[in-house]
Image (tube, rainbow over all chains, first blue to last red; front, side, top):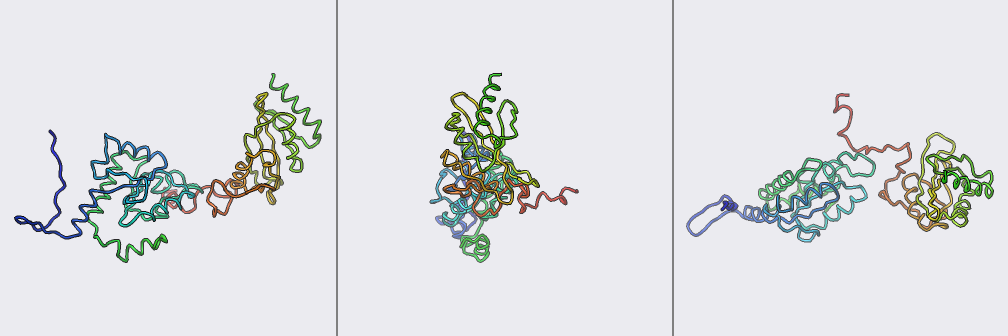
Length: 180
Length: 166
C-alpha cells in the first residue's frame, strides 16, 4: 500500500500529554487544509480547471473538496477566464458577498492581465476591481499550474496572522478598490 | 441562373414601386444589393415584407466610412423563406446626425439588432421603444465600432514599444 501523508503539526512545545502552540498557527493549519473554493469560470481556463477537479488531478486531495458555486461559506475566489468590463460589477459583487477571511486567485492570462484581448470591452486583469493574492500564468494553465497556485494560496493562509484582515494595511488595500 | 431571374424580378418590382429611390443595384455572389434613402426605408421594408414575402429580418448592422459626406451605412439583410432568396439594403446617413426610422414597427425582432447597432455605431433609431446599450457597459461613453475610436484598451501598459526595443 502507498504511504499515507499526514500534515505535520505546527511548531510548538510538546510534552507528554500536551502540545502548546499559538492560536494563529492552529487556525492557519485548519484553514489552509479546508479551503472552500468558489470557481468563477467563464472560458477555456474554466474547462482546464474541470480537469483539476476530476479524479486524475483531484483538487480534493489538497484540501479543497467542497467547491461552492455560491459566495456563502466560500473563502477562495478562483477567477478563470476572460472577464468583460460588463461582467466586472458582477465579479466584484461576488467578492464582496464572500465573508472574511477570503483569498483571490487569478487563473490564466485573461484574468491576470486581459490576455490577448486588449480591447475596449475586456477588463485588463481582475486586479483592476478586486485585490488578487495569487496569479497563475498560462493560456490556459495546465492543471498542475492551478494546483501549484492553490498551494501558494495555502502557504499564504497557513502563515498569515489571524488578524491580518484587521490590519490598517489590509483596510487600506480594500479601500483602494472602494470596498469597506 | 434561376437566382438571377428571381433577383431581376424583385428588382423590377421594386423599381416599379419606388423608382429613383432604389439605386446602386449590384449582385455580388448572387445577393441582390441596393441602396435606398432614409425617407423611404420603412416603406421599402414593409413593401418587401408584405408584398414580396421577405418575411424574415436576418440582421441590421452598420458600416463606418470615415470622412465621407454620408459616412454611416445602415445595412439590412432580409430573407424570403418561401422562395429562399436573400436581399441586402444599404442606407447611407450623415455621421454628424446619424438618425433613421426604427424598423421595430415592421419586425419586432429589430429591437435588439437596433440596440446593438446603436451601441456599436451610435445610430439613433427614431421610434425605437427602448434604445439603450445592449453589449457594452452603460458608462462606456463611446461607440466603439466608429473608426475614430481606438479598439485597444488605453490602460494597458505592457505592450508599449519601449518594452520591445522599438
